[in-house]
Length: 299
Image (cartoon, rainbow, N blue to C red; front, side):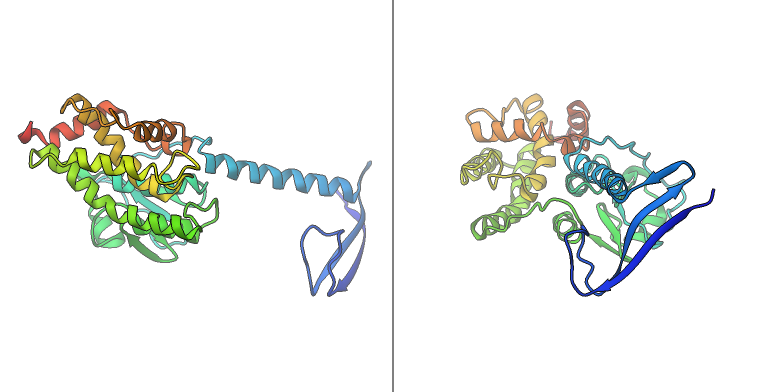
């Protein structure tokens, strides 16, 4: 099909309102009209078509960031699986579907709308492939992130890295007070987890104090139900662990972590509405069974 067009060119250092982007010092192509057989497409129509495609892309990114795009999750790779083509330019997030540390990074990826930019590579931790340690991450743990020909680890470092190095809504505060409190809460995550796990092992009764700390922290800012008022990396850091602690505490330890803690109850309710987070969750019964096996000697 022949394409006939009438096109004029002009170079200018000035920008004009007729172009949606600033193109200083570049040649601007002013299309008067493009003719196909029996068809004439005018510049306004071309602009509408371009805007339609751009809007569709923005809407898709927004849906991904909101977690409303359900992706098909790949099966875990085990000792019989072939390795992916490592360092081929693809950004990969190596996780386990049942690991709370990996879940932190997975949630961050989803909340940023990066499902099409960061490929999930689930690993079977009970039968992990030898190539993962040899070719990908010598620490042989998850999560790890393959990006720009490097592999990085540690979940709290990775959620910050993804938030600052990739597009999508910012998940870390700019307000100095909130930023300082965010760092304090992120530093407390290990103390919180160890206190609750110790109580599961029967080594102490520090879980109540740990959950009281969370309850108090959730009351610091009044502009929302989350740790910093608005949803942030701090919520992502705690969510996978509270997701596990709540059903196990209730079913096995007969301890309701939200009793007398309205802020924590409201936080859990709001987190349950987050589609980006919900896509990473496991069934509570499955998590309880995992913890029962882990702490079977103490039960």
